[in-house]
Image (cartoon, rainbow, N blue to C red; front, side, top):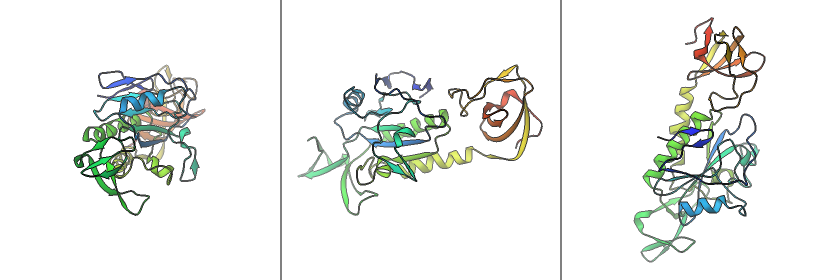
Length: 278
């Protein structure tokens, strides 16, 4: 099972870490809040990952997922990668500063040649690896390289883990949506709308609001207060002392957003509540 530890997926037979020192700027507080899905349009996942990790390449990504299901992580998830380029959506621009980038090994657009379909780099694919579909930003159908079932399942798992570890994430977009006309990835072969529905609709159900302001008190000698509801999140203030009065604002699983000297998230198991939260 995938697990994030100190902003990296744990190494395993399924996960490789690559060095990408060109990316060192951390996300601002409250970020990332978006996941961007891409395709590599490359020959294979390993080569794409090594290319993006290169010091002389002005592009990178957090994850490259190859067709066998192997995950290459280049950049820790608290660090800005260069995957979005010129981009804008919903009144914001420059999505590198807001988003985690997932690159999926896929050839992208294919051209029919006899009974085969050829990529821009010359590799031929059989009709079983191809889908004819209309892109969301286009009016006519074209041929697209399919994604493997294992890739799609793993993208779901990766996004679930990211949303669990970084609860500020509330948006999933395709590169095609933040750079329309310039980018076509992940294209119509990827079930982007289904992915959003699966992950974001369930997330809304998982984050009930607190209808009434409820008081609580710190019930341990010292209690950490964090930026986000995750033990991996940064502290926003010195630990709260026992007996500190808190106002509860919202809830996420066993975490509570509170206001005291400052706003932040604390674990509910270390609080005593004055009024019960349903």
